[in-house]
Image (cartoon, rainbow, N blue to C red; front, side):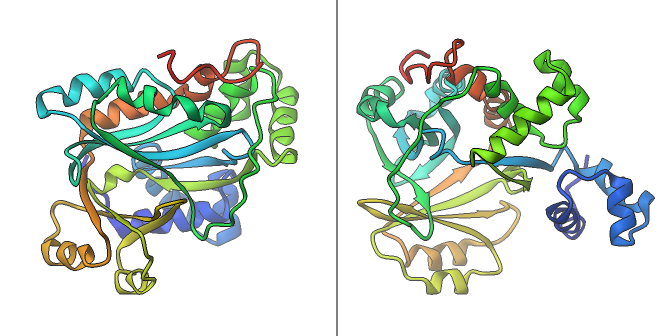
Length: 305
């Protein structure tokens, strides 16, 4: 399959933002779009470059998010990546080169397991640095919940995170539940502010590179200056801020990277390689089912894997 046409992909994203779970026929009727045109675009991109994902409150579930940068020799990158991909608390990992040469990762830690982070990371590298990451702007709320659901909700969250447009009939079959029971479970997740919304997500591998920048002071003009690019900003409590800027290696962005570096103290280039995408995707598909204890009593240890 060839490269995605970004105008088509962005059009489909806009449509699914308004109608994340509706059928294509209903969307076409409500938006006045030719059904066959919509279906061609959907078949071309959905599940390959774009999916609708459930946006879940990690804070309500008692999970803290961290970014980490590990020094790993080039000849050990794949070995360490494979081992990391066995751990459901690893959100994703990719090769990265800059202020640390090795792996750039996102990981999740149950609120009551923060004291295990150094032991956790030292399983994969001797040299590393990590930071807790929060949404920008930072509200300062430090009130984390916990896992207080039955185990059945864990695989349900996996399905909704992977593809929220999965038919109820298929979800019911996978969970061994009736369709009314699945609907009840989804409604409960909404009522308890765990399931917040459904969002169309472009696969980050549409872009094959990212610039990660860390800074102690935020110059908000960078967001305006680089607004034509896809830049995300997060807060690193106790340190400062993190920028992540996605782009394609086919673009000649050397001068922009140099300009961008003027806004941060630490800079790293992240590489979205196909092998790591496969490892990340496989890990993500059953993340909650492996994180949560079978009796539903809470999370397993981040050191178990």
